[in-house]
Each structure stands twice: as structure tokens, then as C-alpha cells.
Image 1 (cartoon, helix red, strand yellow):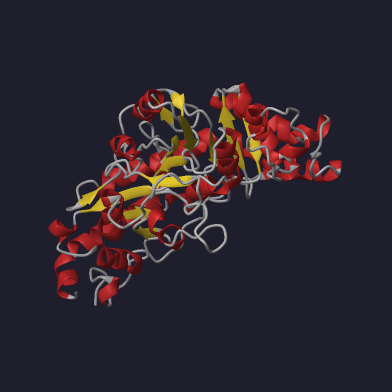
Image 2 (cartoon, helix red, strand yellow):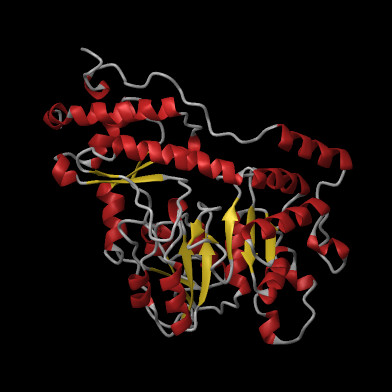
Length: 429
């Protein structure tokens, strides 16, 4: 066998070296953490009225820096983006049985944040090119019980916020943004996450900026900011009103970010812009190297958007290739290509939704008197998302590695080797 023979068929892999992991933790973060440790104050929060209610000095400094960076009035730090999603859904005043429309192509926390407040997730289909929620599908999902839309800026670029805002305005809905994978991306010049009533970003370990675990909520609405801050830190102990509208969902949690995480996140925020430029350089090199391959579509950047490439999303024309995605993926993995993903996910097909079992075993909240209709999660409600997941979507998780130009060239050579051997690959099926 020669090195032109596919590794899957007994040849030598095109890539025989490991790539450097993506790691932006440096001396700056080490100094910042050391300063916190020496201060002896690892958390400045008090779960009661008083100066400590808003957290320690590093949490407050990080929030101020984030608000300035993203151009919003308020930034609220939390201990995870899952906590951030839960807080944002609660802050808009969701009532039990209210419906919230979102996408099936997301981490499941987007949908379970709705369940946390006894709301009903409703799934709209996605756009086949951007992979973001499809506004036309959103409009078809609206019912008298619809309260909000959660747009997810998947893989690194914004949803169509102009269309979604128009829908939200016409139907008197709240618009929330899950920009976990796209901090620093732009939508017609504005930062992603900032065009929603409440938006925000994930800070967990494989995101563009990270502090281990964490999240940051952003909003220009004073009332929402106050409600987020209360939900973050034992709201029931500090809310000062007998008004049901004010008390709504003021059942707080401990979603508080510690001082160590805030110190790291502050330093990481300073590195976001160069990190984005690095990802965009890698994506441009992949586009140039892979763009002409038969039956392979590279990522498209939507009008008015920039893309920060948490994931480099590809689609395959399996008919033109005469091969299944699984065989292509297997061949690429055998050649040593790192981070090759097959499909993404369809949250509406998870057992929690198929069986409608969330709280207890009796189907709550779907079986409660608050649920106004039979919301379906059957296979077929999101045909674009389901087809992409099952058959044609393939990804490179470029967030995992710090790609040099040489690394990209090696990956491109592996792709080209596979494509040069489509006939023997077909014959081996």
C-alpha cells in the first residue's frame, strides 16, 4: 500500500501528528487568580440585602468590562450559561403553560430552561444554510399561549434578528438570545446577543473565552437586569414588593460567579478579538482549500453577519458523492483529521420530550391544566434539522485546536486524499 491509499483501506494516514490544543490561558490569568487567592476573598456574595448582594469586586469589574465591550447598559455574571438561560426565561415573567419557541439545533439547556419555569418548549425548524432558527417556521409555531422566542446563534453567527424582532413585535412576544457559541460576532454592526431583550454568552472551557464554567447575560432593560440579579442570588430573600407582577418568578437560586472565575474571565475578555481573528483566518484557509471539492458545501456567512466559527459546519451532497456521510466521516477520521463531527442534534427527539416526562412521572407540565394545547414533538416537525442531522451535516470542531496554517494544509490534504479515492471508497461499501 502507498500513502495514496486511504488509511481506511489499509494505507498510511495523511496526518500523523497531533495538533496543539486551543488554550488561551496564560500568565495574565495566573497573575489574576493569584491575586484573588492572596486576597482571601473567593466570593463576595451575600444572599440578603446589602452591599454584598451584587457580588465581590472582581465580579463587578468583569460585569462592567463586559457591558462596555458589548455595548449594553447591563451585564450580569452567572456561574454557567445554563444558569443564564434559566434566569433569562424567568426574568421575562413566564407563566406555567406559556410556550416558548426555540430551535432543536442547540444544547439541550436552551429548551430545559423553559421547563425550569414550567413552560412548554415549542420547536421551529432551522435554515438549511445558516443552521439558525428559521423565522418563517417560527411564525407557523405561534399560538395564543406563545410568550417568547429563544434565538440560538449556532456555530458562530447571528440568527436573522431583524426578521425575528419583526415577528416578536407583531405578536407581542419577548425575544431572548442564546449566543453561547458566537460572542464577538456582529449583526449589521451590532454585537450578537445584544439585539435580544436579554442575551448572553457561555464562558465554559471550550468557548472563545472561558473561565472553566460561567456565563454573562446582557440587556439594556433596567427591570430585566434587576430581575436577573435577583434570580441569580436568592430572589425570595430580597424582593421588596407585594405586587404579583413583581413577585413573579422571584424564586431565586445560587447562580453566582466566584471571584476566581471573574478574574479569569476579565483577562479572557481582553483576548476575544484576537481569538476571533485567529478562527476567521483558519476558516478562510479551509474555505480556500475545500471549496472546490465535489458535493461539499463550506459554511456560508449570512447577509450583515460576521462569523466567529465555534464550529466549521459543512454539508454533503451524498447523491453526488454516491456515498453516505458515515463512510466519508470514517475515511476522514482514519486519515487523522481531528474533531470531525457527524450530524449535530435534534433536541425535540430526546426522550424527555418524546415521553413528556420532566417533573415526576405523570407528564408535568404537559399534563397540567396550565398547558393549553397538545404540543407535539413527533419526528417530522423539523424536517430540515432532522435531515441535516441524520444524513448530510458534517462539522469540524475547530474550537478544539489552535490551527496553524501548516495544520490547516494537512487537514485539507487529508480531505483531498479522501476525495481522490471516492471510487475505491464506494467499492468498499
